[in-house]
Image (tube, rainbow, N blue to C red; front, side):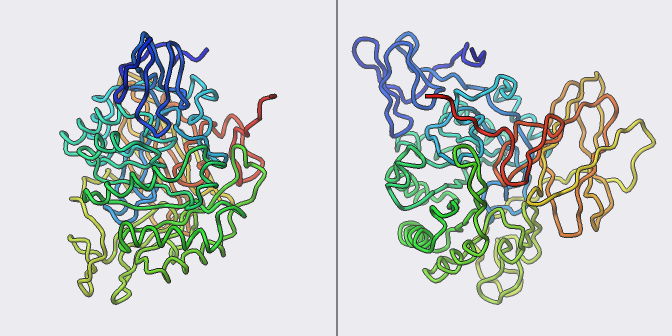
Length: 472
């Protein structure tokens, strides 16, 4: 029995019905639950005639990443974010790359961490991170903790990003609008049959939820996963682009994302890159002004250029980005055209040093291979003293080290990503007292649960663990 289920917290958006029955109005499923039953998501249920949530303050390890990880290219490019994911999901996509945490019956206790609103906010503030990102499996089913913590983050001067498949009710959206700044919404297809069959949700509520978010003036970006031989055709690209252009705006950034085989579709193949480029051409022909490819390491497909003079505004390589031609308003610095980029005041940068201190440090290296171009580094300082960890690209153009301070007892996880073709990997130097694990990241927004030391996948196509269907 999973121990994370042993405690619960009052849930919002519940309706009390006769005979101790409750109805949940968080997702369009509107699950009706008798005493002791749990909803489709597996993390909300009826206890004592009340709707409760089992994942309040429980989730995967918070992780420092960059905003590009969340399919957001037009809000404060290259900004560091603190990514927060929970357990459970209101959908069950056949290709989910976070199925080990999104599907509650597969959740392992060792992957579940407990934290408070105050701890999340203080971690971000202490490390100079200006934004919380609610992401990974899906934040919809973490509604109460997201809402409470996002409000506290706002009070501390932090921004909030909501990365979601957005299978959610209008009531829940209304509760998110006051505390969220950015919505990165996944519209998986415009085909209702696709949604029912592959996601176990349905399309209409997703579209209905996206409209009021955009009308409220929130920053919105849309992404579509192009599943090989399923949704990677021109019709899918055209249908999504036409809906976004018509119902939202041609200025809303649109991302076509490369698929990797996983979960119940682990026997498939990666999306052919040429199909992604064709999808981009189709969307541009429809009139979309900012179209990007995700999980593709090609600056031409991921960088932002001015639609007026053609000047390079933001250079991107994978999950790494640097602004080169934007002014403080998010306009082209060369010709002044609005690039539809929202800016934040520049946060303090992490300290850098040219050489390592003369100290007892252990050095770990990881080399990029195939499509593995990013890595989660898990660190823990079990000592009673402050320590410093150092990291840098391996054989990159810049040889200086970034400095990561850790408090006594602190556990920290961060993303390191390939920033140029010159980089072969990463180096991490830490005191011998610090424990560390490396986790291969298979594409953006993938939260790996298996450390490299526990085993590595046979290829760079599908990560461990490999889903094993249970006997009927």
